[in-house]
Length: 297
Image 1 (cartoon, helix red, strand yellow):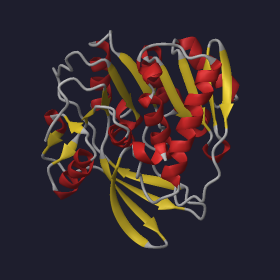
Image 2 (cartoon, helix red, strand yellow):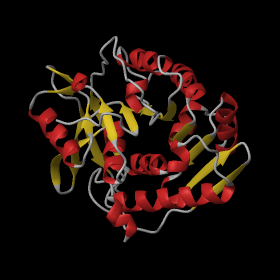
Image 3 (cartoon, helix red, strand yellow):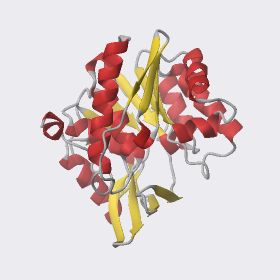
């Protein structure tokens, strides 16, 4: 096991085993939104480390091998003796996935992240206690780090919309980049349209807010303006990992990791590249995020 001494991005969040029910039968593949994002970064050449909650059972070892084979460094504090968390994904006729989770999330107390420059977090890790409070404490303890955030809402697990929104907004106030799906937006802000949600989140303090809309593309916004990008046409196998791919692609961009606010033209280019990356993922089974060479081609 190797962990970058000073990773370009530290990802904090769950890693789990996706158990997928489809017409082809049942399969198991490593997953979890934050783990997928770390995987996508490493495959794109960005030094990425992951702080997670991973069992030492066979599923946990398989997840670790999968991540490390792509260059992800897993912090040793991530491992524990309990069973590895799982998510059972059921695919509908369009390839869209719904999930049932068996997950525990904890982060060891008193942990120091060193001089980490960029911290990404999100998904269940920012909503499920006891780990969610520990994640917030880690962010508070590293005020100089650039924080990026993808809530990746799972309605059955995050509590009421009001409680989830309170947790979301606390981290969003700390974040520089927030990415969410249109489904996340509808859950958190049911009385607002997409433009209203983006405006509300920008008012919290982030410099960049992105809302993805599946096959309809995405909207990216700063206080200076908003751009829409379209999604490439592709034969969808399943949608597992699509949003994670989009988020990882945003984090690949040096401009976003450097703390610079992009122009409208730059934002459109960034969004177009992220949509192209996500199109590769939905064109194949599971959270099989693209490598740099695939996007170069």
